[in-house]
Image (cartoon, rainbow, N blue to C red; front, side, top):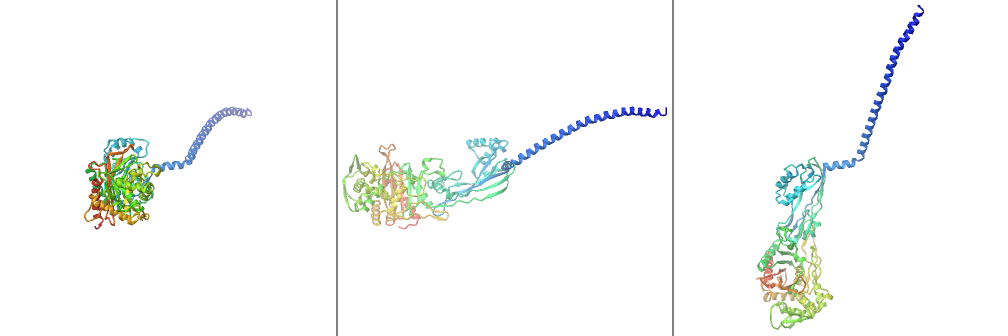
Length: 587
């Protein structure tokens, strides 16, 4: 028993131990299953985490690769580049008085996508800026109601005080920048000469266009940082603009104004449609006045395009009897005729299928060359022209500069019309000597008279005297006719004013020389000449022996009289009288 008891206990112990072992095994087996599940979850978490890292890393790589693009977008949202307009140079008269200037203005703009209530904003801006026209108000509402738009003009070049009132509304994205508004202090005087600059500051006509590059200057720029509402915070980069150069003209403001005033009365008093005047210094070719009526009121070229042209330079017309100066001076210079040579002139002269007659009926007369010019004889001029012949006549027409630009440097200059020799008809030799069948500009015919006034030397006509610090020098004059012939012609023209067709141009204390013109206007269809529409003209020079002034006036389609001696000569006399006083030219 004693020996067997321990064995039993061991056996019992083994059994008991076995049961406990089984429990441990069972417990151990459950731990294995649970461990395996926990490992799976950990592995899953690890996988998810790795995927997350891959996604985030990939996104980071993608962001890094597009950093330049993102930086650009961010920069666009935070910064803005603005143009700093250059001051446009002034246009001055010969004495430095302002004819065209730039005055400070503000342009108001908006960022439509920042405006939550565009219609309300548009109404508020219209009230602040005093925009009253329905068309403009609707256009602004439409511009601001574009949710994707980043820029829209609210008002261009407004008074700075109005712009300040608009900014005081503190609307998101509404701002303003400085510009210049072109102003013309004379309110329309010399408008067709000056021309105008457009809304963007570019010269579009006249001197403004011809000298746009010099006047415009070079714009600057700046980059600003702005807040989310579009308000400027600071400037990070700036390039200052370079101002344009001033242009000083040869015009005299007072003579210009007087010429326009006289023309207005001439047109109104004769019920004419238009008129042109030129005042020139024959010694230098300087244009002291160049007037066109009707005027461009307040320099507003949008009102009536028919009046926008500088007709003194751009329009050609048949000059009529004032052209006889070319015929007679050329014949004298060639020796074809002499001053005292006499001609028996019937009342009319037949040429081909045309009958040439005088402006007023007369009998047969014996006129010398001087008489022909003094009494403006058509028959006499044609007789001399036919004596000269085609070749000589054309040579003198070209010598005086007809048929080509004068070189005055003005946009749209017309060269006129001179028929070439092969284009002449049988009656051209009769028409041209008395100023028909040829078209000239007022400037061309004035320059021709100025050559006679300047002792036979043609000076380049010009309007501009100085640009910036550069004083313009015109080319040296060229001789057209001998000084002796020029003096003889001036003597004839003085007689025409003393007791011929130009007596209404006389000025007490001064000897005035000049020539009248009465030209039929061609019909628009080219079938002949009008019997009702004429151009009445007169060109005078004073003092006759050493002229300081040449003044031309042409009146289009006058109704009270068709004659240059009645309509244009008095206007020339009035302009001359003022200019003589203004320039202090002694009798």
